[in-house]
Image (tube, helix red, strand yellow):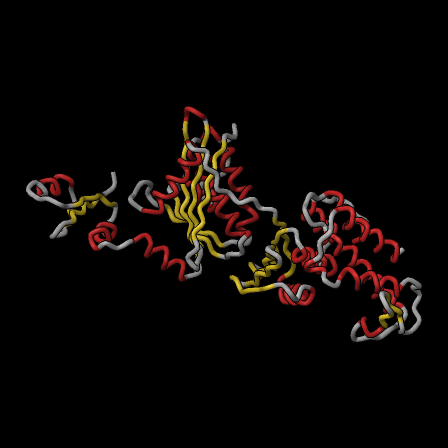
Length: 407
């Protein structure tokens, strides 16, 4: 059994090293409080009325850490496990997470399965919200030792754990601090309650992530940020750890320069698709790999095909964002025709004259008889793209229009 310190709080505060000493001292005393602690620092803080755990969180937050406490629970009668997590951001925002499970491959590990889920969900939250540094307080040592390699990962739960967090650890610097469970730490008490609420009351506080993520060269960080800002000038942006967070119409895109490459994550929206167009046009590897990893589309025949497949495949309220790839294909066709004919320009718009609802090409002759129609279509749908709305049928018709001016 570890060493204990017993705090006696009254008109005269005292700390004892044994329970018997405290009891003997308190025999003729009234109106006092007593509590045991694992460290003398905790006992002193209790007597002084200080929140030692809150102070620790604030100090680490000043260093830019996201602080998280996690805990797991298990109930044999229902063969289920659960987790609770409390996350505190560097600017003091608190986020609670909890949930339960009964996977047959994990349930035999009892509360360890819950401990593992707590770390997975905490890392996932940190990753998708663009934070760089995470400090996890936990009471099961395997959470750290499986990651560090001190313990071999051979059991189903350890293999599941490391597989689930692998991609998050590529972006998030995660550190682990083992704490003693049920040690009077108020944050431990909160996550213990959350885990039990999830297990016995069915409480669920989990994020549903519909975000996509990919990475490209670190050299592309500045050009990508500039491209997104230029293409969607109405988007708001703010600095985060080593990066920028863009937001538009309630959606967000995070672009961060981490560990030698540029990391991008965002919900399926205009912001994400603008960044994907940039990656397709500048990606050093096969863009087919990027598209497959992002959208699960194994084969596609150019950007027109990509727009069509996404509109057909996805289920959402607004399909307008998906037309961007088709519009980009139209832009590519116009630029290719101009380049082939040696046409010089600073802005493509200078080569077209607006006539009523349409445009007329006024530059040097090119081998593309639909160039005026193509520019008119691009202008019509690209203008106001940031706020455009379209149902599936309307979006598909726009793609068909784009295809008709290209081929």
